Image (cartoon, rainbow over all chains, first blue to last red; front, top):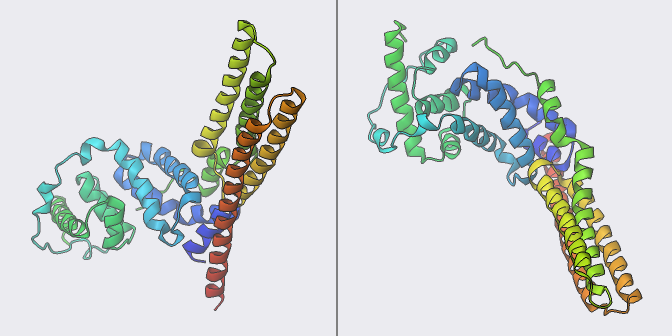
Length: 174
Length: 160
């Protein structure tokens, strides 16, 4: 059953569909929140995200775009708690257009990726989580982060470079 | 990546229960309707009182009206910020609202007739409430119909 069908059924008031939707997206939402925040806050924020999702669900006009809408809500809750870390001026990373080799694609062990993610700045960490761990396309990452697709690409590029540096520091050879 | 969420799906559903509870939804709709109907009724009584009223009575009417408006505001806040009304709930709530608007209009009009004041204003105010409730009912039905149509399309597509 597609997400859209589940969302439509939930919008009509079917509790089982809502429970199924929650069961399906519980771990992806938590993964995003946990990779952005510490373990102590992850569960509370995840609960807050789901409360906002349930309250906003009747007003969701495009049920087919549930995933980006869900992560937009999750991102809002996360950024509320990481306001300081998102405060960097955008121009500083817009200029980073040099293509960097992708160390993530070469990493078979995703656990190693997770272990170094925490060391990256919030905007780069977020884009890696959405793109690699949540498997969202660039366009949806752009929609969720409210930035142009080009900025997503340059941010991904910078994130890969930072990730490579972190991996090299830890002695990991992709 | 062995770390997992501490809250199971069932835990999450249980924590969301207050926002999804039928009792809370009915309570919020009832609070809003009772507040609005009470305020309209109090204003009608106040307005249709024959002769000049003592200051204390004026204050009592004003306090009771503010009390009803406050309950209506609280009900409205619950419905827009705290309680979740899905499409089917919205249809039911809109019909309850329409019934309450008609009943309130009938009561305030009868009160005005009994007291010998004009029925124009009660009918106009009641008519406004009925029109708003009717518009909400039409909108709720349209939204529900659109969702049911989409549900059929998606179900047919999945069955093919």
